Image 1 (cartoon, rainbow, N blue to C red):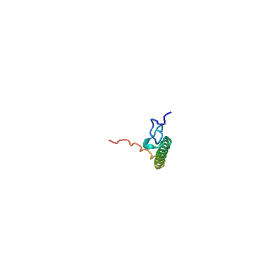
Image 2 (cartoon, rainbow, N blue to C red):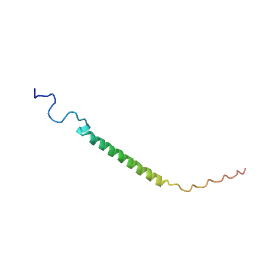
Image 3 (cartoon, rainbow, N blue to C red):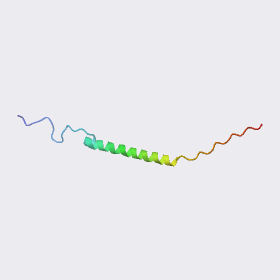
Length: 68
């Protein structure tokens, strides 16, 4: 049996990731960003909904007959 292998010494090559982060960290970051965006969107929506609350609409002006 030979002791030499084709794999270089160091980290295992089976792990995939961006910026050498584990996949679970990437998933956690993506979920965190998604929740953050949803919270911001909900806050903006609630602020807009409260700013434009249902108010008594002004009565439409009664059209006056034209006097010629």
